[in-house]
Image (cartoon, rainbow, N blue to C red; front, side, top):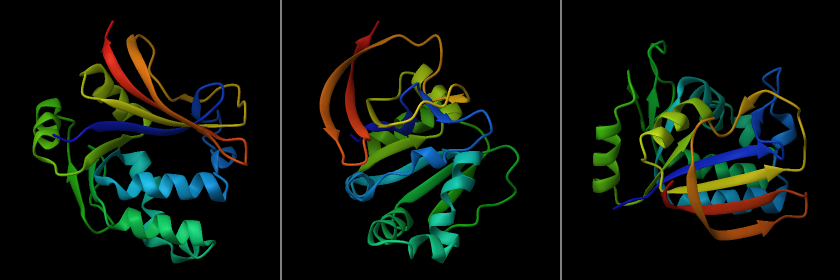
Length: 188
């Protein structure tokens, strides 16, 4: 059975984007990016909401992004190799390969996906992740904390959720970014 992993890059004060919708402060340095690339290679399917999918689709649709560095080239290749499911009621069609569109998030279907998947599944994007978190589907959190305070914006984790977590791994990188990996110990 595959794990469902909530993957996010957040500011130290817990936001995935600031009040203007920017996340330029979240760009990882080369060593953090290389580590994230390794994580992406272990994934079989990424679950996205519309906004996160549109943000991530550039890894396939914008060759200039991949050409910026060896780390970005490596990530683009890893991202294109993974299956993607996009949940949206407004998106007319998807623009990337290995991608399918679903009109609603179905916790039962995600449980079935976890049970049948040969590789782990990630959920990215705070709004979609909140649905998975509240449904008790997330097995693990993989959070990169950026060395920035942004003071407001879109929160990485939803209010009203209480879980006990077990620290599995922690790493720091030369750019000041910190990686934290937690397993869900038990519902509180």
